Image 1 (cartoon, helix red, strand yellow):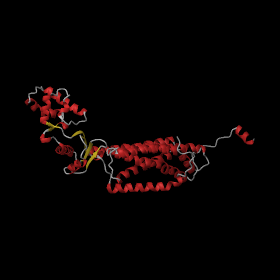
Image 2: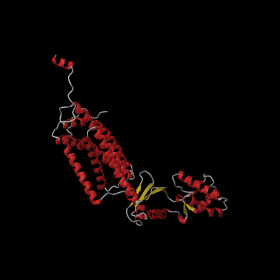
Image 3: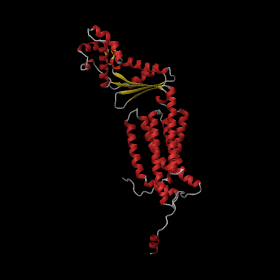
Image 4: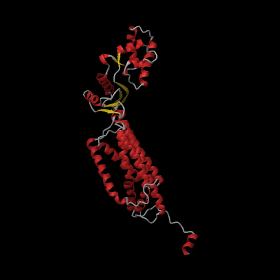
Length: 398
């Protein structure tokens, strides 16, 4: 499918506005990073993150206010779009704060939404905790259970709860669970409550691990760029590899600068998006370079700028289709993916836009600059003129 046929746009003639835009964005990003620094997520600076599910729409602002009044530092409370689930994150500055912060979050939430009248919250209990709570009441109610039967009963109750979203609203929902008799239901109603939330998971990252993850993320990006430089230098010429890597490095710097300008956190998912963009932008650049190489063999007497313009026009439909469709997908994630995917989708949207124009207006001008620096505007890699055959000479004479 071709959107554009026989186009003849002078792309390199319009390179300076785009180069100027790149310089402005890069400078703005560096200034923002120098003044504000980068905002790292819990993955890189260390902290605790809890995932909670609520029975109804979670009171996000109420949760945030309660935690900010009790916890020092930055508190992140994000609702997962389309779900009654919340991610709570808090930073830490010392390894000793790990357990303390986790316990304080847990206590604050239980204080806000815990069991009524001091009752035990079944929706936030382990099988062992539930067994310890029910052992005495069951004996007093005359329910004959051995210790093993009690452990099996509590495991069955928690298993049923896990299979039904982690939240139960009443003891009557357990009537079909093995071992839950009417007498057991009565004991549950008298001794436990069913809180409006449950803790799905808790993740803790120490500051030292965060520093190591940050260092490894930088190395992963640099290794990817280095590997691609070697590949393109081998596949084409070394100047092509330099141009492609400079363009991709340009895309990465601008995207990171935009994260600082918009005060968005850098997390492992953002690093994954950046590495995705490295490959995406490099692929787009290679497509243009491959067409340039083919045209150098066929259009020998044209200047390198004309060859590049011809090549970009020939690949224009492919670029618009692939980049446009990918951009639409990333925009959908940015608009409807919620807070959890916001950083990932923002990096994709920014990177696709910047990466698409950098292949033409950053990488290609580097080739022209190098040719001019060597003292010739003619393509150095042009193939020798093919020899005329005897039949061709005869046809010309005729």
